[in-house]
Image 1 (cartoon, rainbow, N blue to C red):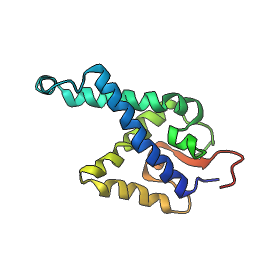
Image 2 (image 1 turned 180 degrees about the vertical axis):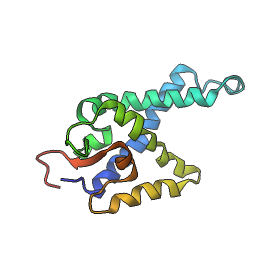
Image 3 (image 1 turned 45 degrees about the vertical axis):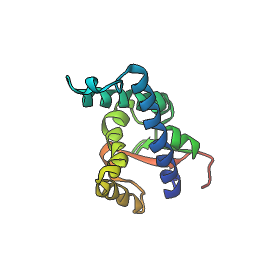
Image 4 (image 1 turned 30 degrees about the vertical axis):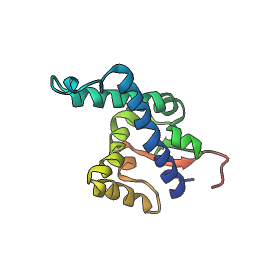
Length: 148
C-alpha cells in the first residue's frame, strides 16, 4: 500500500530538521565552520557539502541500507522500496539517484520553492510517486502490518 501523503510530509519534516542539525554538529567538530580564514582558501563550499553528506549518512545511512528508511520515515512507519520488486533498493540507488533531491527542501529557504513544489505536486497523483521516486525507480509504502 502506498504511503499516505501526511506520513511522507511528516517524515520529510523530521528529516528536514534532523539531518542539517547533525551535519552542523559534524561541521563544528571538524572545524569546517571554525573561522573566516577557512572560507578564503580552497573550496569551502565543497568541504561543507561533503560534511553535510557525512551528516546525512550518519543519520540515515544504516537505516537506508538495511530498511529503506530515513529516520523520519522510520518514525511514521513508511519505507522506500523498489517500484518493481517491492524490496529495499540498492544503497547506491538511494544515495546517488534519490538523495540529491533532499536539498530541494532546503533550497526553498533561499527562494527556490518552485523546485520542491514541482517535485511534490507530482506525488499527489494516484500512485503517489514524486519525481525523485520516478528518477530512482522507487515508491514509498506503509510498513507491513500498518493499515494507515
